[in-house]
Amino acid sequence: MRLRPRTRADLETIVGWIPDARALYLFTGPVLSWPVRADDIERVQVERRASAWVMVEDEDASDVLGHVDLSPDEDALRLGRVIVSPAHRGRGLGRELTRLALRAAKELGAERVSLNVIDGNQAAIRTYAGLGFTADGSGGDDAIRMTRALDDLEEPRAR
Image (cartoon, rainbow, N blue to C red; front, side, top):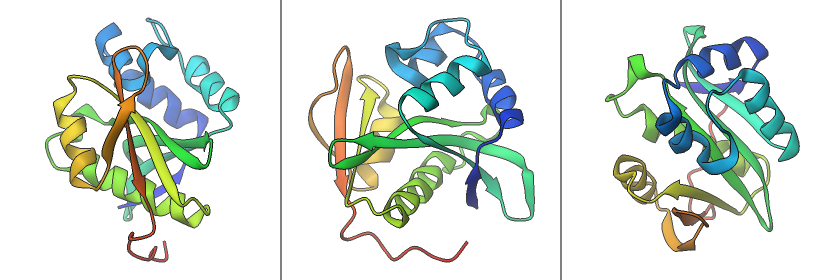
């Protein structure tokens, strides 16, 4: 698996993974409202000065498996808009997507990564905790803020 920059065509695919307002809330928190359009997600990326990525398999870079973005957040990079294709869920790809995003953050020079996760999203909370994130307060609304230092992260591998 690897990350590649997200394209406009990828956005249309990603919007198709969001079936309802609850799924959108888990994806973006209160940032966007239902129904969501590709332009809405792109606007958030621009406003937050985020770099957006999709996870693909090396042998078929056209089959998008997941999405994540990284944006400046005080002295860290913020991990956001994490989602795995419904067709590929249950295979540990959320963990792999997050691991790849951590490597990308380190390659971009970050020393720390932060994120907000909706309280009650136990699968995501377990994934992040398993990768070394710790809760360090409220992320506002019903979100938990989690952070992870990158100093002990394995060295990034060549892509």
